[in-house]
Amino acid sequence: MHDEVKNYYGRVLQKSADLQTDACSTEEVMPEFVKRVLSNIHDEVLIRYYGCGLVLPQELTGKRILDLGCGAGRDCYALAQLVGEEGEVVGVDMTDEQLAVAERHVEYHREKFGYQRANTQFKKGYIERLDELNLADNSFDIIVSNCVINLSPDKENVLKEAYRVLKPGGEVYFSDVYSSRRIPSYLVNDPVLYGECLTGALYWNDFHNLAKQVGFLDPRLVKDRPLGINNPEVLARVSHIDFYSATYRLFKIDSLESHCEDYGQAVIYNGGIEHHPERFVLDKHHQIDKNKVFPVCGNTWRILQDSRFKPYFQFIGNFDQHFGIYAGCGTPLPFNLDSESSIAGCC
Image (cartoon, rainbow, N blue to C red; front, top):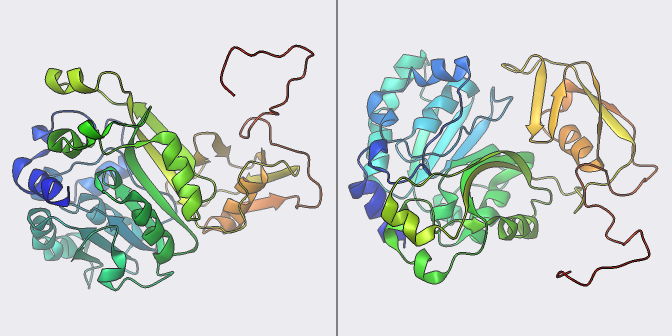
């Protein structure tokens, strides 16, 4: 499958318009600062973009970022501007043709950004084998990936290696494709369907469980959208499965619990994060307005306390008293509260 994917992205696809679905495209409205950043990127890099979301987490200045499956380098060159000259972006990809485009424009972008040194580098390799690239343990602040992990035949090892090289308190912020059910092997083995970022997709609940197994204990969904398939032949083969583009963030914080527990805590966003002066969006369920007391579960409190976001928040409460599962973002009480029980469904 590695060879099939390299052929598809290195030789079959020459530009974004060659795609047969909208899985590897970004439909969301871009903020003005993102448009300005992208305007500085070379056209040859831009036309070979096959991502499915914006992988631009907050608070990037001076950070060291790893891009898994960087392709021609669009996201790397965007992030290189946001981390600043003192930061660093490392892109990893296995496709020679894509890397050739990325590496051809390193000096162009250094001059375009006005940097004394290039803060972007690219490595050829497999995202499930980062150990072969001499990437050290606990060496990156943030890992991003854009519609690539679904293409890996060993997704568990991708997440394991990401966890290994990530610093404590760091995060994986990535967009990818997920399915509504497990995909049968005869579809997984189709090189076009796989290359189009469809049949390599994880069933969403398998992803949640896999992330937790490797140490990312509380996967946070940031945004999502259903995918459209504009090729009738492709649609006919996979119409019984729903596919979604989704952005997740996974934090490397050992103290997180398996569920959202209520300890009566809250946070206040003080502002100060560049491009996010009035509201901080942690995930789909936590959009925190500046200067407003915002009740949170224990995991959210810890994520903000133990990550790079700590300086921008006030923290209210502790873990002295427990009130049960947190209403609204946890699992509801499973027990029947009335005297009648149903036997109609499973579980």
